[in-house]
Amino acid sequence: MIPVVSLHRTVQVTPVNAQDIVNQILAERPRAPASATADAPEVYAPANIALVKYWGKRDTELNLPVTSSLSVSMGGHGTFARVTPADAFTVTIDGELIPSESKIATRMGAYLDLFKDFGGPFALVTRSTVPVGAGLASSASAFASVVAALDATLGWNLDQREHSILARLGSGSASRSVTTGFVEWVAGERADGMDSHARPLTETWPDFRLGLVKVHDGPKPVGSREAMLRTVETSPLYAAWPAKVAGDLRSVKAAIAARDLRALGPVAEANAVAMHYTMHGAVPPVDYWLPASREAMHRIIELRQTDGVPAWFTMDAGPNLKLLFEAGSEAVLREAFPDLEVVAPFSTTD
Ligand code: PMV
Image (cartoon, rainbow, N blue to C red; front, side, top):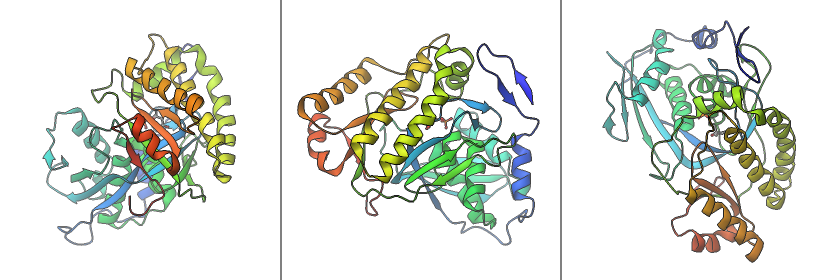
């Protein structure tokens, strides 16, 4: 491995690249569609919200994480995708053909290029069922659905581990969007990342709810890739993060097994806050919190302390909050946050 110079940590860059991993996984798979694919199937992957966060890469090319992480998939909120072999790469999102020079088309084009020897180039069409403007990143469900769509069109018959590894090459958190329910992304130890993939938990929690509190939907000041790298390389607070995550993973898994929100909520909330503090310690600092984010955090803390409402928050690389609660608290939370979008991750009808 080649160490990349950094102030506090060493991020490893392996001699293995993303193309090697794709070639390895697809080595025995068909290289082109068996027949015309005008009726290529549309497939779905859910978005996910981490309860114990992924923050920091040990390998930036393969999106290998420093620590494991754990999320809950968002049921019916995610991305549908369809890929069809075409003369040139195009991407259409929610009915709109995206200009090829845009950031999103460039990123998706580079990703689909990894698969061009297996039936590409591809025309990609996606549509999102994530509430519009709810302040949710859609890259996790996007990359997971694209891999599922490639698999469906080209007949690869990927298993869940392979699906997760290929989705991870697009975006780390996409490795967890390969199935419903609670999902752990096991960090793995191998330099090629073949042991770094999703592992679903068996537990369900029908009353578990996520609430989306949007405070701002403008572009992020810093993307998560750059923010993670800067945190790992310059924040003295990052040294404490891996041990914190290890403890939080144990606590959150035990809380899920017991369906105990009062055990889960405080740990998930503190995990998100600690992640943000590691970023605040970076040079220059990465600060996604807006005054309205802080106001919403204080509102939740006040509802808990004053009114005894069992609700906690988590936050990702942005200013919006995601509330963690159970069905019984929905009415009071809707009153406190009139624009709240509620997601029931274990409901089949939501
Ligand atoms: O998958 P990425 O590179 O967009 O990183 C996502 C990081 C967080 O959303 C902040 C945490 C997580 O575990 O999803």
